[in-house]
Length: 510
Image (tube, rainbow, N blue to C red; front, side, top):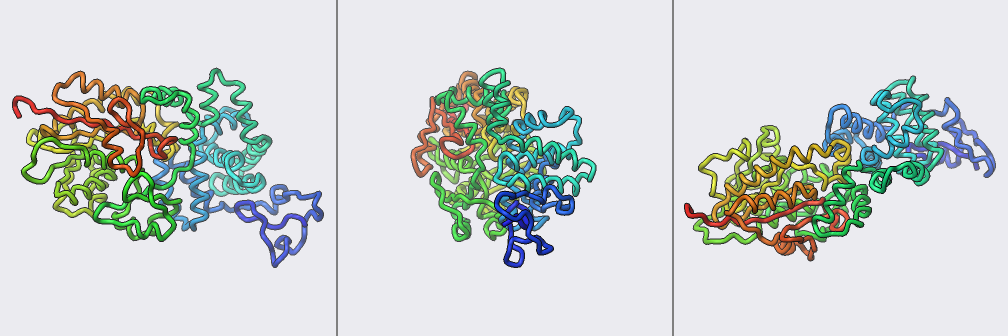
């Protein structure tokens, strides 16, 4: 039987109970002539953009044109186009996959385009990236990938570039991804560049992550597993605010209980805004690694007797995920939380995140954490400082970030990180605990900052972060190294969160 109509994913559909086209004709009779006529005949080509592919295109354009974050643009676009769960999943896989594989796909496209890629219309280049990912990274039949991507080009760019997109993607489709990678890797200058091409990471990040593994006590040959974990589609992590929220709604809708931390769950994703608990803020999307480090700071032993409830400080609170979890824990323990955030718009996000927590428990300060008022210094029993960092530990959740960052970003951030850690230590009361947190395993942002603080300051000592982290986890994590703790995507299934814990020592003045 010949081929009939195709749906937007390239699957054959029945027309009136048989494989006939919309005119009732059977095309290409016989098993030896299964020609995909829809990509050959202009009358059969779609001239309308598939909504799921349109959403993915809008995400790529916002990222490349507006420097936007995909995880913020995608949900809004899905809701705007009213995608169902299936199409939302397709759009997510397409957008994130194209962004994640951008460097490798660009290297392939450069061999299929008759001009430098930077001379292409940026919108056309984004369409080509989407087409390349469908052809090489998804289970979309080639004829459907070509037809629908050309249709998308006509709809969002124009008829003129559609022929270019069609010709380029036909050249891309001549080889599968394995063959393309073999061709690219054959021209690589060294193993780092080869790994960068195979796993779609910039070479400098491959080097940095390999150094990070060694710096945190792991083997350098784990780099392939780490890079693969960066490219795996992340599962959505959920947390029910302790004493305030529950996982019931999520579990009833197919989520599974988390295996690493209490009150967590894992979801396949989609538009989680359909849940009342998410809309109300009592159930939040938060990586398990972030949950663990926040709980560890709340659980670390404080030295000395407190006459009243503890005072907690989140020094870099925006956008509010850890602050909300800490606020709920503080409410359970009779403590109060001050959340500090320098940017007003992010401070407002922190307030929204904290709204489910009783108002008498928390307050939000807008200001530079390095310039706390004198009356706040030396007064907090627990301080968490989740410093601005390169984000190399969250590449799987922020697919565009690997192509935005440069080695210079790390060098620029380190002085700020050291200053914020100093401010956090200054804010802690004698016997109080300070948690230094990054979402990066880079040695310059982690162990080097810790070593610098210990070398310069005589008013702190370190606590064993690995022991405390294991105490709040549901199973041993084996994340400890030299008193600090480092989580890994390929080992723990979390972002690569780093945690160091300090205790403030009494001084003569205190």
